Length: 557
Ligand SMILES: [Zn+2]
Image 1: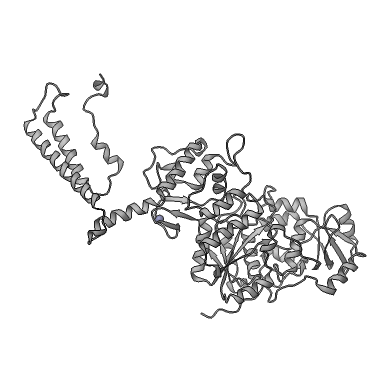
Image 2 (image 1 turned 90 degrees about the vertical axis):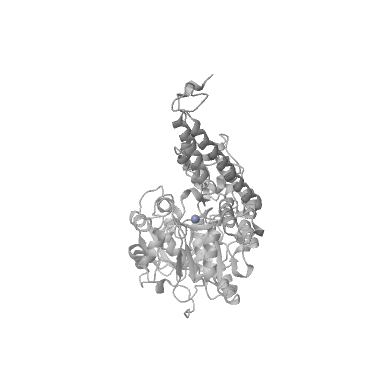
């Protein structure tokens, strides 16, 4: 199949960054322009627009595009776009300046301290209906949703539209050295000769689930663009310097260097679930990527969205018009029976074999002071992540952000219903709310000891039976089995003789067994003989080996 050459959304990468004379002129000119004060969110958006991250947008959208995005997830001309870049200055001073603006007038956009960020070319003013915006973009008016809260808390009623020119790129602090703007990634991918590039978005240190998705994609595509988002409004539980370092630790140790590019991305995060999944795909197209990984509950918040809504929304768009192909993945886990990372699409085994990938579970197991199992997080990543986590330990009540039960449930779901990984079910499930640190330790120890052993043990059984050349087979195992059978055969023979001499009824049943009891002993001994070396019987079947002819109190001295 011939791959058509990739293009940014709208056909060309937007560049609204002022340089050289144009920049100097703007700085001089700004001194005499009316000024609007902007917050951090808008500063981030301005930079995204200016560097082409939000191509084809050259500024903040007008009414036609705004309404079209809300109503049908497209710009007025039909181009897919799901979350509108808008500008609604708040505060008395700002509103006074905004209300006096004439169409075509230039405005200096400044930070609180007066720093000039951009020049705004005012074109249009229109009112927004906050309720409509919340409902249409987030599917809810609930202010518990951070995106909805942001509308009510940080936006005015009136939106200003028009293109912008960015005066200077901001310093990204600890992330500055990880910055690669779209104009550079296009060139980079070309130098690397990548025809297909898959983008992966993340905010947390990489776990094995992430690695699995990325490597599934890398098996069929040329390159991987790992694009952690930084400086979002939501709390970061791993400190800045450590988040990217943890990624480097994974890449250095587990990825071929020439197939991965790591770059931070400073974006505004809305947690709009499906709508944001489309936006994130379009953003990556603007970086030159051809594919985008969409996992479970992409950009979701709590349980506001169906976990797979972020995948289903792609049905609303023609792949051609999106211009970037989504790769959908189910929730992945480590299956100890497969001996692999897997998902319900690829593994038939039960929950009792699974170790789950849970971001919050990983955070908390680290807070409790334990290294997560190697099946969940690479030890090299844990080394960095455990030093960068915050809060760094448990609280005064001895608990991390979640109780030990939640952590157990998040990472070791088998423990709630099963005694051991891959083991037999408990008679009664344990309520996670009642679990203690001891339960977390038990589950963790079991995972450490057995996660890789379950599959090994099974392999061992098979080699034992099916090696025709026996030089590599464990000799003592075969000998032990032969000996067990020989001894059991001897016991069966003795019990057969016992029946011959047994009385029909006995005077002292503690001393001697009657014929019926002797037959029962023989039956069980024979069954055990038939079971030696075979797959283990279910524990319920083992109950037949244990019986008491009299009331138990009769046996006490
Ligand atoms: Zn499996």
